[in-house]
Image 1 (cartoon, helix red, strand yellow):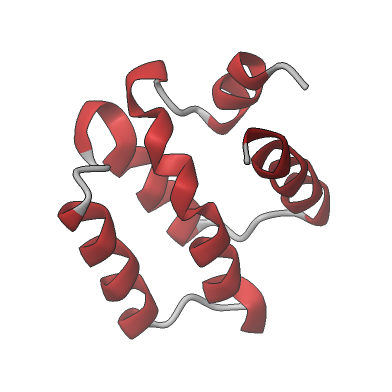
Image 2: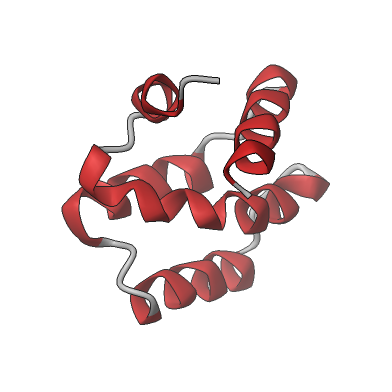
Length: 85
């Protein structure tokens, strides 16, 4: 998998690549079909603590928390994250 293309697909600026580490949490938050306010606050808090909101990371994270992932996006993202691991 071409990680740089994947980041472009996710609309994550190269400098904010570390924000993708939150995708598993985001997807767990979407598991019931809706991101609850408490889940959103926890994820944003973790992102702030780890400095993941800089360089466009905040916009990416906000988008992920606002728009549910498609099954195809989930599959692609999990595959990419496994490759990175």
